[in-house]
Length: 343
Image (tube, rainbow, N blue to C red; front, side, top):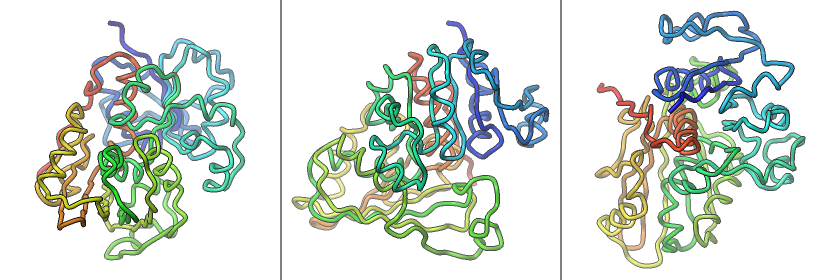
């Protein structure tokens, strides 16, 4: 099988860096293009020092004429919200695209504009994108040309809720208490993500207004009969990477931890990257990997699901490569057997 030729738009950020770290060692992929306008001409290893000596690639400016991309099989769009929608309509028809931003996650233009605070300039393509939560949408992803990669919070939340929604065992309100490391805010420092602000600190942000809420509810309605009220709260952790979500729910009948484990085991029987653990997972176990670890606590009808993942890998670049693998007819694990570190 010939190697897949891939391009990365937006290679200088954390998402682009992780795409490079994974794809440079992918046995069936060749990175043929990586753009970063502000770093054009610089070697990749000079910007991402962890990749020094591992590639001879240099960053380029985004091409003005997109016909030059026709020899690529895939492009990854690791760009700020609002930029992918300007690029996707110009791609040659032979190129498949995986967007890591929020531009095409929501099906309705009005919802996108409400939650992202900008006009959608390619609404005709919103319905052309398949939502890329691999574990719940595998067959659609295989046949897709365009993938909207889920948000990191959405991935952690959906993997914790999808089996329960599919089985129809949820009753009433669901509360998601989710926490993330600073890398989720991107590589450029801002007042609320600067290390002196975050170290030894802890705070909530975007209460009731986080842009992943409509994405989560849209995906849950596709999985099962989702009618619960979702209360979604996000918090800033004083760590660099990782997401930990505690999901509080009430079930339609009493369930033990063993009952919940059996339900999740059935649902994720073909999901290599979902690991069911005893008690609480730990973000240290999943950092730098494509795994999502899930644990449970139960008492009568009260249930807590704990979900932990690396926001830059399973929550972004790793899941994007997992989706590319499916689209290309490869084993979805290809290039993604990434062991964590201990400690």
